[in-house]
Image (cartoon, rainbow, N blue to C red; front, side, top):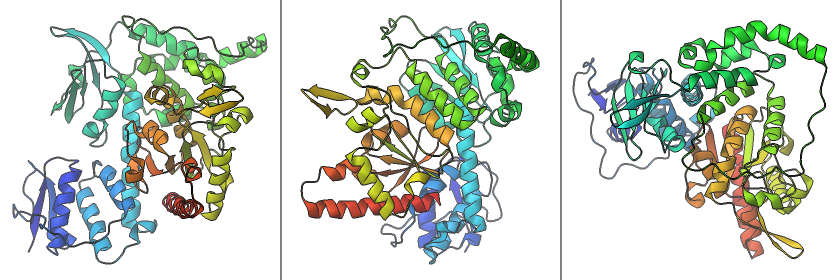
Length: 498
């Protein structure tokens, strides 16, 4: 028997999963199934429908690594993606339980490459999409044109809802149109570049800003082209300035050398807090400024970019009020390119004093667990979602105070850029605050523990508890039991990042 499995859309993971369950239960081998999207022309097997999933399907274990990659890879534009996923699922069902650990297997390698390509496409959409402001009968609307390589429009829509929740916007792509009216998200058929205005009143300001922050001494054209391919240039106002800036860079560098270095302006012990702007005043093109920062980070040495990121936070004048009680911001440490990047909640008392992450009681327990898991501590990068120690002063003691959603949101851009610069294979969220900072969602740690979810920037995130959780367990037996479980979580993360 041969059947056709028809999905509702090109990235219909829920439909694929349901159909695959029925096909496996019916014993249909990969070569007996033809996958296609509704509306496609019938293929070799015509319209013989796939069997529905059984009411009580046979039980078999599917590795979390497979499901995590499958949910991302199904958005790839490769027409063979559905068959590839089902072929891997069938092999796992037939006894190859450790298949996903065999990175040299051609099908596994292909799946990982597809997921990587989708994540990169999502990153490009986040960084290089530019809204143009237009006036309509219904009021101001922001419209953008983007050409994704893969079927990422629906998956990435939530990112733009979170980032531009107060705006009314439309994103037009050749395949889909995504709209947000301030309350509801909608999808429609694709459009063309002609549907989006070529510029708006803000673009001259943005081009002037980009030219002002351009550093000719750190010019790396090849890195710029690699990070921002030319296909995106025509959508971005700042790229009109790039040819001139490239041509002027050598002379500007010579002039800088001739002038000599100037002594830096003295920095205050603490940044001065400036009241927030009134709600009626909207910052000009703030998302575009963040995109320019991403581009500049990508064009320089990652270690230097991390140092600049720290200096950027030191110079902010809009830090949360409570940061005045801390002695200093605490950034991450570890090698760039570390396979594992661990994100905790915030620095504690000892971290605040020393200016280093994970050096207090929880950090020492974390080091013991890493050693027990066989993971060299000096090969991992560790950081926190919140960069200052939030506490309540009580006499000589400083009592830890959990950061709220506003604190996590404030530091999130720094954390995401930090993760992007380190470029780990896997990010490990230690506790609820880290998980919320990375995913933008409040996820229950105990239910999510041991699973891999997707971060805001598309990175895979492995969830587990914060080591401080173990320190709060009152009895020694319970501590020992949870310590062993924590070590197993670290081992699982290490295997995924291998």
